[in-house]
Length: 229
Image (tube, rainbow, N blue to C red; front, side):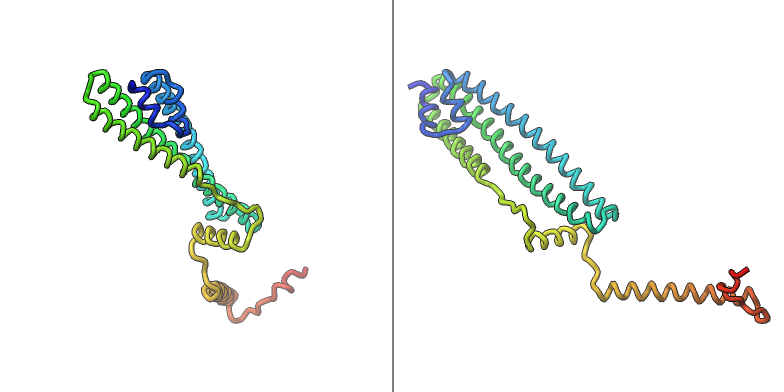
């Protein structure tokens, strides 16, 4: 049994892109070429995924800045928070996809290296036991590849279209994360009292200044009367 037949025998009964490439190959050289094409496709998809992830991160940052700067009104705020939540969900899915693509590329490169090593050993007439040890490593790499792809494809997230109370809580938590801890009622009342006291001081100072300017002998004319011709 030649090297190609032995490699094909190891993946018998398994399905997947890498396995199909190996099954369809008529030589180890053709097998390596097709695996290289598979790696290139994964790299292209990974680049697209990273670009989309970067675009969504910019969109999320812009939405957060709009809320922080007050450019978003209270009525629109919920929609913007929902948009941020959706964007983060998309980013999580894209991150997962990027991780799977990265793992695919890593494992495919490892498979290429193993096949090249076995091919070189076979051509040089290396002892069968040595080649078999490399083949065992190759088979282990295929198992890891299948496990990673299966795990990645099985990860899904359910989403409800209608907002539940939990959704509302999530939005409040998200708003708190963006804007910081909201002030308590007591702190808000204290701020209002301080603002009123400040206004009263300003009015008192203005009145005292006006009295000094008019002098004690002059009677101050009410503004309502002064406006009458």
